[in-house]
Image 1 (cartoon, rainbow, N blue to C red):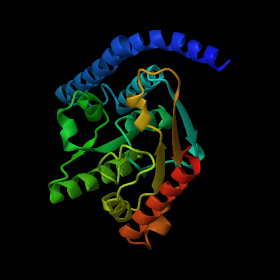
Image 2 (spheres, rainbow, N blue to C red):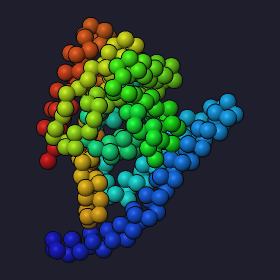
Image 3 (cartoon, rainbow, N blue to C red):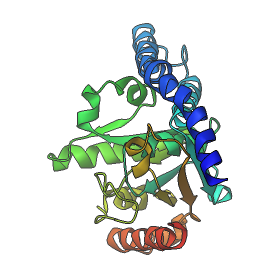
Length: 258
């Protein structure tokens, strides 16, 4: 019976490989170009509502869902009810390049979100998506620029009633069971602007691209914890908040990792 199931998986997976290699990959990167054109047109017309943020966000979520399907991702979302209404800072652990894609899918088209991204991504083929979602680029080698970008990101999210994603590790770990030290910058900004913080745990994305051409599903879990409310943030320093969030994510990984 196990052999039969494996054969069925292979039969289903072979056409999906071609779909992934040709149509989906091309479509995803073409989508970045299209988003970039929308941003340029808005700038030329000096009208951001010509292609509004809601349209650009929904388009990016749709493209992420298509790529997730082609890669055989089975997304499990926990704690969705914990997501607050209004603006908030989401601080996930950072495992792989697939984190942003699966997180967008978990948030869905109605929870408009932007992110803080490393400045190197400004020159990547995915720049169209980052620009369309009004991402804030951060130079990790320039402390003053980094702080200014974080403050700008927080103010933008608060003024526009949206979420802002900041990866406190600042780099990919490559392993869901490994968590690097957290920078407290995101928590300093949350404290300064009195914005709730949502700890987010990502498990399983390291296998997405490593096993892209193998049959079977890639289970990815995203856990949204209860937000740390502004009244609690007010009375804690940013390092304490950072340590608490990191510990909560570690507990989730220990609990839900296979």
